[in-house]
Image 1: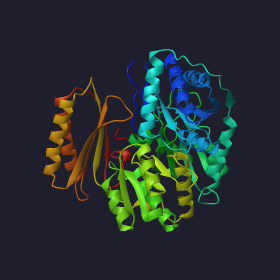
Image 2: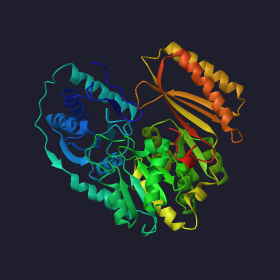
Image 3: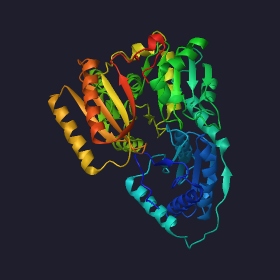
Image 4: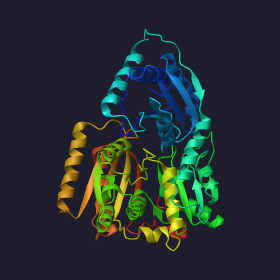
Length: 483
């Protein structure tokens, strides 16, 4: 079998292919069981999953593998990844496992691992687990310990819900009129309940608990590209905002009634300003990744807030925040970590609750006004699905040519090209101008680069995300998205 390798956030792959097939998932459970047994004489693991159908079949095999190594398991059922992190920390578990493929379609599944402090594992720990999976997949393990026991922990989600209600910045959200698009994912049984308890004027869409439609024409990634669909629901219900979540509840995208899309760039800016004003932004520093729009750093600098950069992936954000003692970090995709002493992972529900509280406390200002000082640089990000393997030589040729283009910009923009850490066979291209650049010039440069890449490798699919400086999607006035 091919070696299982961790990406930026766990393991991810196609269902019914190694290791996301039933016998293999048992072996993965054995490997993870052995890993925690090396660290605790009486290991306890909390396990949760999102709503994709494969999870209901793979979860029992994963748990059986853990049992076989003498591990006690708390089965949380359907819960968000940050919920697994929160409850792993609260229950003092040795490991938290989220069976989820996040924002990917139902054809994928994945495993995200959280340590006893609610943080992603370090690379050396991932390497140990990779070796153990390889060992268990190669031969039957000889040691047969006393089986563990399973506890149904769905009731523990009440602590997670109550925690979100407790830490809302406003006494209630009764003045907030909002649509929640749960993407038919793990937010469905949790997010709406949090907002109901806070008194929000609420409408919930796409909240199936056992769905073949997870992230299908719904949720954060669909809304990012096609905001008009959610805006139509908002208009029908008189809502001011739409909050859209991904499959496992770590990613948030917001839309206002005018069709403006707010991703991690704007949300981080608004949150950073709020926490700074409240005296809670430790070190006056916010952590993000290199792919964030450069307009974010410029706007924060004018507020006296420093931006620290790290690599793409929640585990790198968590590590950078932990090392510096910072409380706010996130990615432009909408993964936002508010580590205020109560939370450790990117939590879209918590970010939405805090944002809702900010909007209630600032009723004289809209989200557009709160985010207005952030002027985006014109930017186009493209996901390229590549057929077959990209050789090292091909990638070096592409990167060398891109470097020539970037050098020719003389600092008046930037170009990034990298392999996706969550979607096999996908590369991403980012072309960004300077603050004064026109979107048309960025589009022209982007088109030239795409044509070069298409001549170097076989590209089967393209997906563009255009970010104009005013955050308004082209065509929103006439009901057309740019997707």
